[in-house]
Length: 110
Image (cartoon, rainbow, N blue to C red; front, side):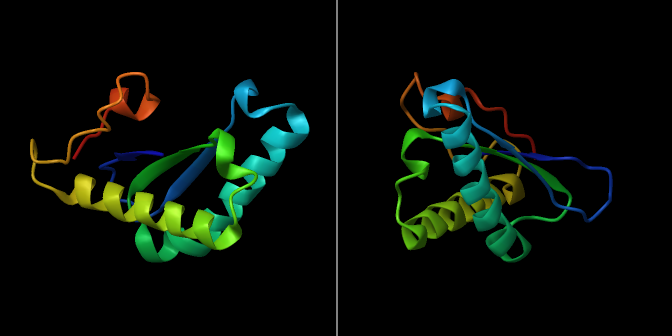
């Protein structure tokens, strides 16, 4: 998941969802995005920062992950990103240490 503070003063939370072909065929990609969309619908109003854009990137396990665990994963990611975006400039927590992980290249702005 990635997040960006828009800085336009509007308190709207915008969400986007994506799944690459590595997830599987169209049916699997759509199922993964539907699950993420529903989890975000339930959790974003409570855990996401207003005025930010979030992009949910489906990973391989999202389809088979039990629903309570998926909700917990999404909630944890939203809280962590909110903390990173709310941190003073230069004090955001470091990205994952795996250089091959897309989130390690994510740009986070405060």
